Amino acid sequence: MKQYLKYVRPYLFSFIVGPCLMIVEVIGEVLMPYFMSLIINRGVANHDVPYITLMGGAMIVTALLMMAGGIGGAYFGAKGAISFAADVRRDVFLKIQKFSFANIDKFSTGSLVTRLTNDITQMQNLVNMALRMMLRAPGMLIGAVIMAVMMNAQLAMVLLVVIPLLVIAIISIVRIAFPRFDTMQKKLDRVNSGIQEALTNVRVIKSFVRGEHEEKKFADANDDLKESSINAMKIMILLMPISTLIMNMTVLAVVWFGGNQVIAGTMPVGDLTAFVSYVTQILMSLMMLSMVILQSSRAMASAKRVQEVLNEEVDLTDDNAGQKQLEVKRGKIEFKNVSFRYYKDNHEKVLDGISFVINPGEIVGIIGSTGCGKTSLVQMIPRLYDADEGEVLVDDVNVKEYSLYNLRNGVGMVLQKNVLFLGTIEENLAWGDEHASEETIAAAARAAQAEDFINSFTDGYDTELGQGGVNVSGGQKQRLCIARALLKKPRILILDDSTSAVDTATESRIRESFSTTLKDTTKVIIAQRITSVMEADKILVMDEGRIVGEGKHDELLKSCEAYQEIYYSQMDKEVEK
Ligand code: DCP
Ligand code: MG
Image (cartoon, rainbow, N blue to C red; front, side):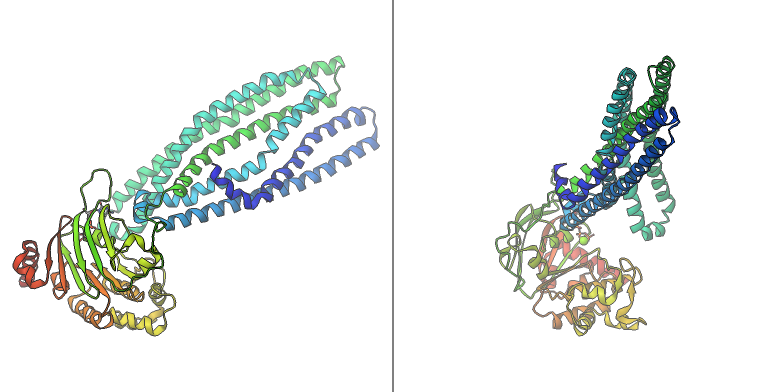
């Protein structure tokens, strides 16, 4: 928890002044019953009106001071807590931005969202509460005990019985509640993950008519959360009635014993009323403390979850890169005996002993059955994942030697599952290069065969895209993604199945335009259709994580069995059509 201290430091003023102002309120609270007892004992008993007025005035002044202290304390408490939470949120967000794909795979997106929102809010609530109660509750407890003992030490003995009783009750309740809140937070995570998944995939769910299934899945998770919340609250609910019961019994005992003293004439009436107030204050402050402890038990669970994100080791950094200023210039790619697996615990290798060389400016096709590792292979080039064994070289330098910025700037990649962002087409394309002029953007769109359909929209480049690019067709989206990558003017361009939704005629036009606009750029094209890669300088044929063939179309057709299989199965389909 020490880790969070640095978030307190910038707001130290609020963190100190807030609780101090609350002390003003506490002093007032403790003085009020005393003034009251003076009015009753002296003023009322002696019919001394000026004295009553004087004391009444003192009470009004105290009340005003209390109000000022209360408002100030609440203000600085809230300010400190809100600022604290905002800074933590910022750092968690920045950390997630640094996450590698492998890190993100580890936490689910839903869980990250819960941690960024709900968990940090829990922490904020705790800080806010702590700032207001931290000094106030113990202050009130101590102040009231002192006043009570000073007023009537004998009667104060009652407290010796009651306080331990209440403390035991509170501790047992908190101890039972603690793990239940922990469970509750985990269930909340599951609900959030479910919501996240269902919302992002709502189209798939509808098209598979799996709405009912999803509803049931969600209802289950939601009921689960409900059950565990009720389970936790059941215990919380006990806290109030038990404390109130103990408090009322105590007041009864005080009035009983105190009343006898008043009748015997050993205690003034005013003292009895003040004493009852102090007893109430003591028990109230214990209840406040228990609330803080309970809230902190919830917030501790949250703080731990936030900490997990903050402390997660980003397994892919350029901290040890030796040649950070180096940029990708020529675009040569070489794999030396590369092996890779997503899950490090003895799972099967996804890539197994991959070796090949791609020379600058070459067009290379990668082909192979689904799941054979094509995407995994190309992800090694911009270091989206790191190889477990072997080396990946770009321009004869290990990719780990580059700064991630320079490497990824030099390697443009159109991901298989690509998305566009909320905003206009132009904003989306300029995402590849924010300083791009209108002409450059138009040229990139032209090269990706996107210009015609963009111009056919009434708003042209100013057409607003929905989240993820929902309001363009699959093929249009792919072409916009290609144009976006082109604007980066990469030395190496990787297209991962990026024209799968584009018709073959348009696809071949894109290929043609590449041969003029991107003459010197190394192009790696992953495709399902052999026609997409037939004209490449070289084709890599993959099967189950290995390269089983390498060469030009004609050579492979003669020598590579796997290639022949793919070729003839696709040709058969053509004939059937
Ligand atoms: N895989 C995994 N975890 C990931 C991604 C993939 O375990 N985060 C597994 C699934 C496959 C294997 O790795 O068994 C290879 O996956 P690829 O995505 O590399 O496969 P392809 O790109 O070749 O398949 P496709 O043609 O369907 O895109
Ligand atoms: Mg793939």
